Length: 66
Image (cartoon, rainbow, N blue to C red; front, side, top):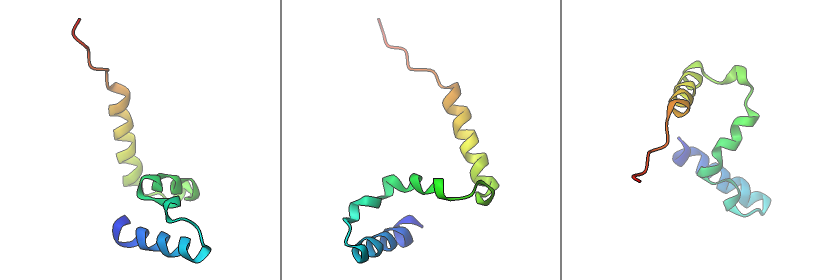
């Protein structure tokens, strides 16, 4: 979705405001989450993110040979 919809949307928005397009690149889309009410985030998204968090918390740094 981001390549087909958000990229052109933000490019047009920034152009109309006279802002540099680099303000909202794909790598910054996570910042948009702060503007979505928690009640509107699909339960499947929450479940997937919780699963990623569980794996990250259980991860151990790779040991390096002495």
